[in-house]
Image (cartoon, rainbow, N blue to C red; front, side, top):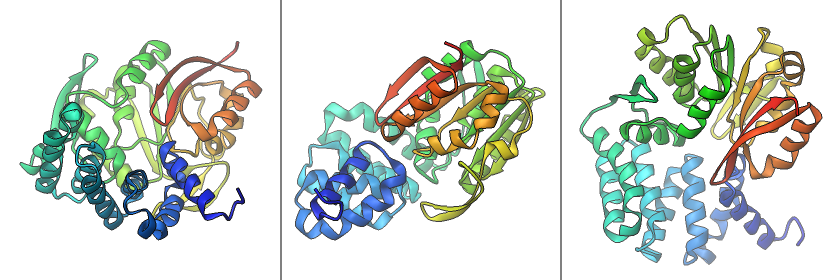
Length: 338
């Protein structure tokens, strides 16, 4: 089909959502919204629009599409889940509890999945915003932030007594061991940051995140855990990492873009990248660092970037040591040498 064919554009938007290509969500919404009159009875279109709008913070569209999903398929969890997550983000925790509880009643086969989010909504509804728990033999304290998708996911895990991506974290602990300098690109609320600090005990942890709310939350959580971080220095910078310098609108805000090659001068032992679709740009702007320091790398790669990522790995003499597949993307662990 031609690139300007409305049907082709619709299919492209739906694929962007199904592959969790977050960078494409604003574009997907702009394509899906105008066709709603024709597809308001299409559960797939409404579910895709609800999820894309939730991630892109378009609350009005998300609420409409979620409620439409519930009306079309009251035994499907998608509408309840998106509506519950939306209400948690809006800090309307009572309504979140109502939506998720209705989902548990109507979709019992998915009850455990919905209870996972309900636990967070109930805790916040009762005004409890700090949580303490132990993971992998290490103690953690976190504030339960709910300002975007990543913070809500982390907070729900914390309430459940665990960190996000626990398998990845445990693998890193055995694979990396103690090291001096870690660079983390994309840190959400500091889930990985604090685990790396406590488990790997680096001298310095350089953290970059494009969301100013995330930067504030990382700093807050680091402060809450200060007494158990030893001598690790955590430096957090509000900037997106890319192939060069400039500015770019990411979802609803303009942010600074910098290249790691221009801003990291210490010898890096371990590089972690989680940037929702911008991973190839990050690698492009870190070529000199990677050639110079040969760090081990943990990187989340979306399906659309896989071919370019594998080419980069081969070109720079790295090999895949381990991988953990998740819906929409895969976490790869790569190291220099064959």
